Amino acid sequence: MSARRRIAIVGCGIGAQHLDALLLAQDLWEVRVLCDRDLGRAKAQAARVPGAEVSTSLEEVLAREDVDVVDICLPPALHVPAVRAALQAGKHVVCEKPLASSLAEIDAIAALARTTGRVVCPVYQYRFGNGLRKLWRLIEAGVPGRALVATVETHWDRGPAYYRVPWRGRKESELGGVLVSHAIHAHDLVTEILGPARRVHAFTATRVNCIETEDCAAACLEMADGALVTLSVTLGSAEEITRLRFCFAHLTVESALSPYRPSGEPWRFVPRDAETAAEVKTLLEDFRPGPEGFHGLFTELALSLEEGEEPPVTLADARRSIELATALYYAAATHEMVELPLRTSHPAYSGWLRWLPA
Ligand SMILES: NC(=O)c1ccc[n+]([C@@H]2O[C@H](COP(=O)([O-])OP(=O)(O)OC[C@H]3O[C@@H](n4cnc5c(N)ncnc54)[C@H](O)[C@@H]3O)[C@@H](O)[C@H]2O)c1
Image (cartoon, rainbow, N blue to C red):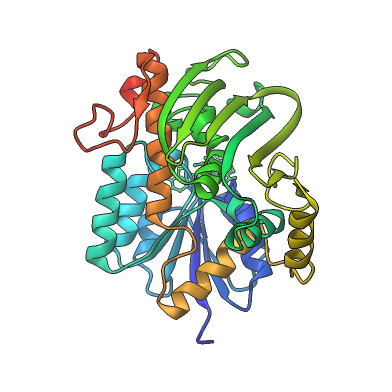
């Protein structure tokens, strides 16, 4: 293993949890700079890392030669300009969700990443969990069989205190509501596991908080292989859960219910018959857990940079997630069924913001 990757965290809200993960992976990462325009926030995190420096300016961070990777944890509307500036400065980039509010922006970022030869790793940390890893092991062995249906519930709770942060709940700064700020993770897992959707219907509503953006949604998807999926989303659930439930021909699968760690243990695998039960048992008996959440993402990212391989989450992955969000917003706005993939000629290719309710 060569030298540790030197990283700067820009934005010290969720950035503090990224730091937790980077400190768990100290053999792979050296945190050089904590940046936040709120100096107190940057200092509070820097105090956790001997030798780390603080900054209040992204530009200052990008000018540093001792930073290889910039981890963008800024409010959503700042993501695209920050990612572009970081790539242009020759840095690899990690960026929080949503990476962008249009397919056009994702495609432009992908082009810039190719030109600069730098990597962009969008943050979808729910992809790193031991329950989900078990499902992948079963899928790779062909155990579950054909996907029939799935349901996804993102039932979380957010109130006025959460929306006191000025960028939240506003179209211009949050770039959307619960579909892209909260449920984006569970919805990403569905398309990761089942493949892309080919047709979607959706409804959105603002029923919980006095905000501009949606905080409830219902949608149904027909996946490319014909499986049917129902999405249910709210920020008004007294009990918080995230649950993914898949009915495959030979296996019913239910995720953990932990709202922010549904891909961790425990997952339930219910086989249809004794033969499937035996296969599941054999395949999972020597399962070894790996690092989860942000820790899993940063661990795999460091290893991929070392090997010169694709990052553990790619721009193509983010594109699929952004494409689904675009289709859901467009369907909700027009009351049309939307067919995917969305072409560059689609009216929402250049973004969903104009399709959000006024
Ligand atoms: N992956 C997840 O599970 C997860 C969870 C929470 C938030 N997020 C995402 O992370 C991003 C940040 O969310 P948050 O909840 O941490 O927000 P936050 O408001 O708590 O933190 C953002 C920080 O960025 C700083 N900041 C704003 N503009 C700046 C600038 N120009 N230069 C330097 N610092 C600046 C603010 O001072 C603030 O401390 C959002 O995109 C959000 O959707 C992801």
